[in-house]
Amino acid sequence: DAGITQSPRHKVTETGTPVTLRCHQTENHRYMYWYRQDPGHGLRLIHYSYGVKDTDKGEVSDGYSVSRSKTEDFLLTLESATSSQTSVYFCAITQNLYTEAFFGQGTRLTVV
Amino acid sequence: RKEVEQDPGPFNVPEGATVAFNCTYSNSASQSFFWYRQDCRKEPKLLMSVYSSGNEDGRFTAQLNRASQYISLLIRDSKLSDSATYLCVPSAGGSYIPTFGRGTSLIVHP
Image (tube, each protein chain N blue to C red):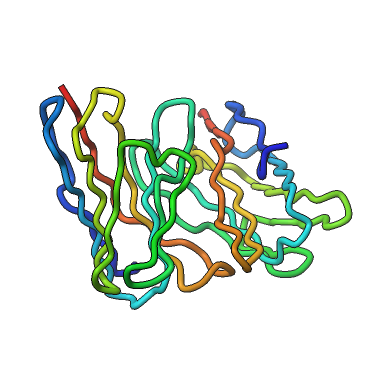
């Protein structure tokens, strides 16, 4: 299995609090992605990174920010969590835009 | 038009059946294709890669039709353990970020 881990795996937080999810890879892949998955919606791209300090928005980026200060780490931050951000969050990595994606095990976030 | 379109199903089949899913894609520059399998509440995992006209791996066969811009996945002799959601993802390089749709749900029953 590819070396990609997400932390935490589960989190319950209150509305209005900041939350940071971490994705760590040991594959030295250039691209990293954050997706959310909700019933009936499949995987939706939040943000992605194409290198250290190089990031861009996906289709559902409102309310989220990201940072990538090292090749191996990609952080997703919810500045002020809302109940609509309750979801399962997956991190993925690809070597380039032609190759397959490897996913982390997911983070289940509940905002109450 | 969506980048990827799949029938969400569910496809309900008995053990031993042969089942096929189609996936249509809109980006004609797509060069590589991937089928992922996602079990309930788990992360997607690569099932098969397709770089030319098709690929075969045991009971699974993927066929690519570039002219019509679709790729199919055929599963023969279905097992209970094949129950999952199957996601089709084309890859075109350049600045094209791979898109995951909802996939196709397969339920194999005894």
